[in-house]
Image (cartoon, rainbow, N blue to C red; front, side):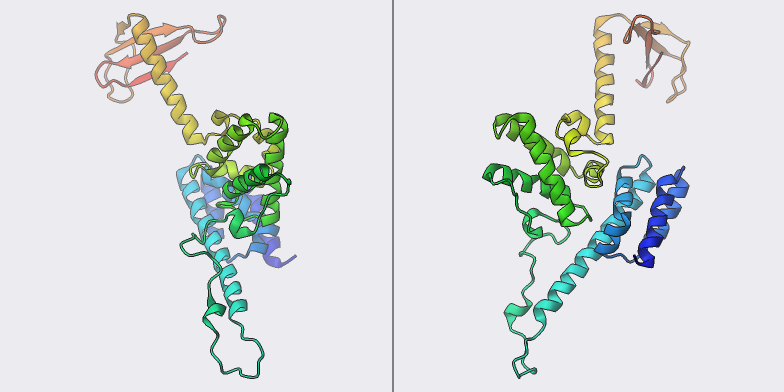
Length: 293
């Protein structure tokens, strides 16, 4: 094990035990200029550790993590392209070392127009191994989503894709309509660019294929999406209460937004009977809404 891997493993432990935003940012800033290779990322698991932070609740942390992952990914792809180009352009021993390489020898391996930073089953040479054409295509589809921004080895990601497909196939009892619908749902949520944490949790093993295969769209949603859905639900609740019963005016509550004391409120039993009622307050000046129990 190289010194770089040993050092990065220690950094990963520090990152996982960091207790506040400033500590995390300090550690990430030490990782930002580091030169890494695919082997270093795989052995040290630093790519997975930093990748998880892309969905951190702190925007500075998530932005810096995204920047680091992107730069590492670009560096790895550049090294692969360089190695591929070197081997392709090496002239054969034919007694005439002065000849220029033929155009075919310098043809890039990446298809024209393809994004060099996006991994796919086709580019990574991954094929389904179930023996069933439909299932094999679904394995490759899941791989495309999992590997789109992953730094993990091909074999590792491919194994996860096969495990997920097998769980769905088992749960649905074959390649029926329910099977295809579930695969589509998993793919759409995995492919969501705003939800890198979902992909990372599967690749690093913190979310099992068995559990993932049974998750609903709501459970798979990113934290941002869950927060937005919660806000919509609360808005709808306010509207439904407004239509259902008359609000009482009061000057007992101060609006945190405009600092006025002109509000209307209503109370509703939203939880079990032995729990206190929830009070919904609306500022009549600026329209700000809040609730408390």
